[in-house]
Image 1 (cartoon, rainbow, N blue to C red):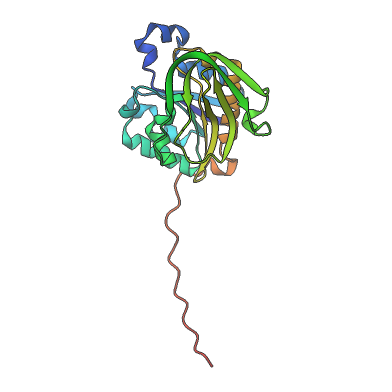
Image 2 (tube, helix red, strand yellow):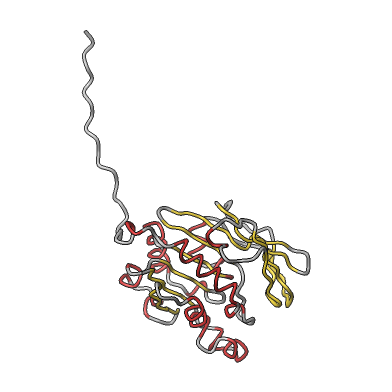
Length: 246
C-alpha cells in the first residue's frame, strides 16, 4: 500500500466561482478521485488546517506527498517547510505540480530561484514524451495535448534534471522542461508542469495517469518506509597508533 497525501492551498476554489465550478471538491479532491486505486491510501491536506495539515504524524505516515500551490507560497510556515524537506531527505517522494515550482519546499530542495518565463495565455500545450522508457511515461502516447493552459517557458532556473520525461511546446513557440526528476537524499522528486486552476487539467485522463505513475515511481522502497529519522553523524574513529619502524 502506498500512502499518499495530496496537499493544496485550497484558496482559488474558495475565492473564484470559475475555479469552484471546475473543481467543486478542490484541486486536491479532483486529484484524489482521479488517481485513486486499490493500492493507494489517499488523504488530503490544505493550507488553512493546523500545521497546514502536515503534522509530524501525517508526514511520518506519508510515502509520497503531492503538492499544488500558487498564490499563497509565502503563507506556508517555514517550520512545516523544514519538516517536509527533512522527510524528503529521509525517503518520502515529492510530486510538485504546476506553480509549486515557486513554493518554499521546491526552492529549498532545488537550491535555485526556480524562476521561469511566463506569459498570460489561453492556448494549446503539447507535451512530448522524450523518455518513453521511463516509468512515469508508461501508458502515455508519444505526445498528448491540453487545449487550454497557461504558458511556462525557458529559461527555467532549476538544477540540471537527473531525467527529463516530458517537454512542452506552446502555440506561441515557447518550449519548457515540463516533466523533470531529481533525487535528494533518499527521496525522489518529480516536477510536472500542467495544472493552472482555471482549466480542467486535473480532469484530463493522461494528466492523472502521469501523476499516478509519478506517485508509484517516487514511492520509497519498502525497506525505507520505516525510516523515520535522519542518520546522525558518523561515530568518531579511534586514532590508529603509529607503528615503530624496525
